[in-house]
Each structure stands twice: as C-alpha cells, then as structure tokens.
Image (cartoon, rainbow, N blue to C red; front, side, top):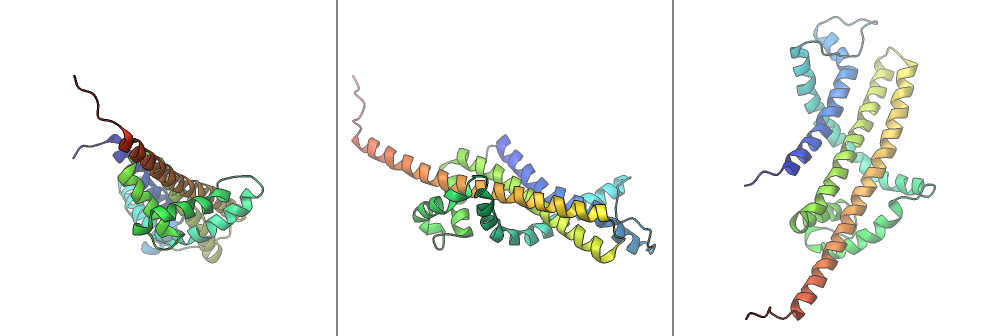
Length: 229
C-alpha cells in the first residue's frame, strides 16, 4: 500500500479538528477541575489551566483529545439548523445555499444504492463515498471543507460550554461572557458557510463525474480501434 502525503495531511487536519477545540476548552475551564482535585477551591481560583510543565502539557493534550471527541458528538446537533440559517444569510449576501437543494435532488438520483430518501445526511455521505471511489482528486477538496467546518463547529460548542460554565459557576467576568457569545456566533456563521460549501461541492462533483462517465461511455462506444500497420 503506497503512502500519499495527501492522506497524511487530511488525517492531521481531521485530528486537529478534534484536538485543538478540546485543548482550548481544557485551557479555558481546566483550572476548575484542577482546583477540585487538589482541594484548593476558592472564590479567587482562576478557571484557566495554563500548562507550564511537560506533565501539564500531556494533561492538556490527552484530556483535550477526549473532550474534543465529546464536543464532536455534541456539536453534530448544529448541522440541522445550519442550512436554514445559511439560507437566511444568503438572502442578504448571495452564497451556496440557494443551489444546494437542486443539486442534492439531482445527486440523490445517482446515489440510490447508498442513500435513504432524496435529502439528508445519508445523501451527503453517499456522495462522499461515491467520490472516493470515482474521483479521489475531487473528494480531497470536499474533505478540506469538511475539516474546516468540523473545527468551526467544535469551536461553537467550546464557546457555548465556556459561557454556560462561567455563568453557572462564576466568578462572573462580563468581558469573558461577551467574548464567548460573540466568538460563538461568528464561529457558527463561519461553520454554516463551510458546511454549505462542502455539501454544494459534493453534490456538484457527483453530477459532473456522472456526466463525464456517461459522455466517455458514449464516445468510447463509437470509437474505432486504432489502425495498426
């Protein structure tokens, strides 16, 4: 099995999409857990956990990876409202949302064996599977958009969790709460945009690859064998 740098790059991007948000959450809120474990809870204890030794770095990386996996499962709930909100935004600033439904319907007809229904996540994942089989170069671009939106989607969950914990456990820091709210909103809008582009590209590539295959079959059927002297 040959190794391709692109496979390693995409694996790293996907890995960082889990590790980075998880590590950010550990840094933002890990101080509370550290204080509880060391029995030094006080009203002035900082919620931040800033690694200053190899052991603390190992804690941030290990705990961050686990937290990132939990955030990934939690943040999947954001997929459902993403496209409707993107449609509302695109009514002001034109974007991909207006074309996703039409292209998804066209692609669904090509992907019946691997999907359920004419829309939804099964069609999207069937489109990605189809491209992996038929057009690896095309699916690499879709994968990059998926890695971006997973990272942004997890950051939405990070800022939401930090906002709720800071609000519930204190101490109240108005600037921190405002920053969580603003950054969470901006991350969600950026996630919705990248999510929309990933879907648009997946369905568009499926239609184009199928069209090219059909054209090749027609042309190939009419070709004459090459003349050999």
